[in-house]
Length: 355
Image 1 (cartoon, rainbow, N blue to C red):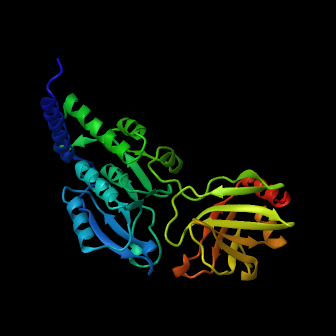
Image 2 (cartoon, rainbow, N blue to C red):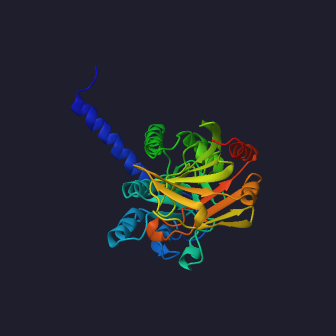
Image 3 (cartoon, rainbow, N blue to C red):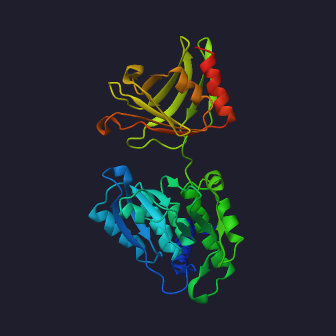
C-alpha cells in the first residue's frame, strides 16, 4: 500500500537532506602539499565590461559559496567568472554553480594573470573534479580545449566508505544537477568509469556535443534561393553580447556586384568603413560602400565589395571583420569566420548567381 502523501514528502525530504549532507563530505584529490582555498577577485583586462571577470582560483571549500556571495553583495563589474581549480568540496561546488546560474554568470576555464596585468584575457588553465560541476552553473560556458575540463568518480574525504544506498542517492542528485544545468547526463557515466585519482578529460568538440560548453562562433554556410539567384548565409551559434551583436552573415550578388550583409538586433543610423582581414591580408571598404538599415525589430549593415576583396574571400580560410562604429552605437559589429571547402563554394555560388 502506498504511504500517505505526508509520509512520502518526509521521506523525499529526508533523502534530499541526506544527499546534501553527503555531498558536503565529498572531496577531491588535489596536488600534493597544502591546498590553496579558492579566492574570488574582480578584475577588468580593459576599460570595458565585456573584459571584466571574477577570477576564481584555488580549491573549492565549504566557505566558497559564501565568499562568492560576499563579492556579489559588494558589487562586481561584468557577469563572467573564470575558474582555475583542481577541485575541492563537491557540495560547495554544486552550491556555487547554482549561485552562478541565479546571478546570470557566464563561466570560462583559465588562469587570470593576464587579466590582472591588463594584458589580455584568460590564459589556459584547468577545472577538475568538483570544479567541473561548479563550471556547469554558467549560463554560457566557454571552453576552447586549450584548458583542461576533467571529471572523475566522487569519494568521501578522509577515506570514509559509502554504502550502495548512499551512492545511489548521490548519483541521482548529481545527475539531476547536470540535467538542471542543461548538460547531458552521459558525462556522469564517463566520469564514473574513472577512478577517484584519475580524470576523464573532455575534448572541445565533445564538450559542445554534451552541452558542457556553449557552441561559439558561426555555423557552416548554407544556400537559400532568393529572387532569381541564391544567397549564402552563416548563423551565429552563441547568443550575441554587448558590442558583439551580429547574428548572421550573408553573402550575395546584386547587379553583378558582390555584397556582404551583417544582421543584428540594432544597427547605427550612419555609415562607417569596414576593415576585413582575409588570411592575414587587410582590406578596407570605405563608408561610401556601407549602408545601414533598421526594420521593425532588427537591422542590417550592407557592404558592397570590390572585385579584389571578393576574390580573396572566395578562397579564404580565416576571415575577421570590424566596423568603425563607436561603442555607444554598438561597437565594432565584429565577426570571425573559419571557412572550409564547402563554405568557400557556397560563397562563390552566391557571388555568381545574382538575386
